[in-house]
Image 1 (cartoon, rainbow, N blue to C red):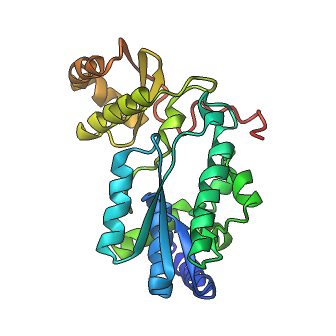
Image 2 (cartoon, rainbow, N blue to C red; image 1 turned 120 degrees about the vertical axis):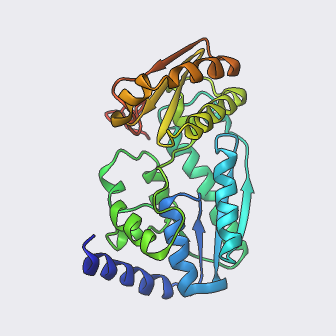
Amino acid sequence: MNVPEAETKYNRLLVSLEKLESAAVAFSGGVDSTFLLAAAGKVLGDKVLALTIKTPYIPDRELEDARNFCTEHSLRHRIIHTEILKVIMNNPVNRCYLCKKHVFSLMKSEAAREGIHHLLDGTNADDAKDYRPGKAALKELRIESPLLENGLTKKDIRDLSRRLGLVTADKPSYACLLTRLPHNYEVKTDELRRIEKAELYLASLGYSASRVRNHGNIARIEIERESIRDFIDSGTAAKIVPYFRSLGYEFVTLDLEGYRTGSFNKPQINSQ
């Protein structure tokens, strides 16, 4: 890590957060939002409020991680429950935009009820380069992204999190369970729970950075490329197939391209 550069960014972040006087943080329990919340808590204390969304497409383990972190660090925390919007029940291409517009509106209203005028999210400098259809919703709602504004990259955040002793420093990246479904595919709660259980099982076998892409009765497993040979040679498949079948999958496949974010995304389509 370029220590002086990363620390300079971190110190700039702390100064910018302190100027807000109070803030709410959209807190998923992931690497970026945990780092942002820890920084905000450092300078704002009880003037920061963590807001976590709970929907059927957010795994329970993520909610538990968020709750545990706030408890351990004595941070104010509120969980906002919401159902799946009707407009995304068919997992449309612009699902991320529609979802973020809805959940960030809920969090913004909750923050306003507390007299808080700044809602922050964990978008970082690397995210600006990726296909992120939900960014338009954040811009429309005037959500603030201090990590992006202060030039903090994912590597900066992981390295600084490690130095700060945050448990999320090496946590794999996460995206909601709707990203495991093809676009224009009916969203069913029982299939979301099936995906969640399948990924938990893979994690228990040592494949924490993995995805189970759901194609009806077919499970397409994505794991990191460097782990594919071990996955095949170790006999892991012999354990996975019967378990996945017990969940309702008829066919269990391994994607030879390996794990990659947004494998269902079609960047050429305008998400709005």
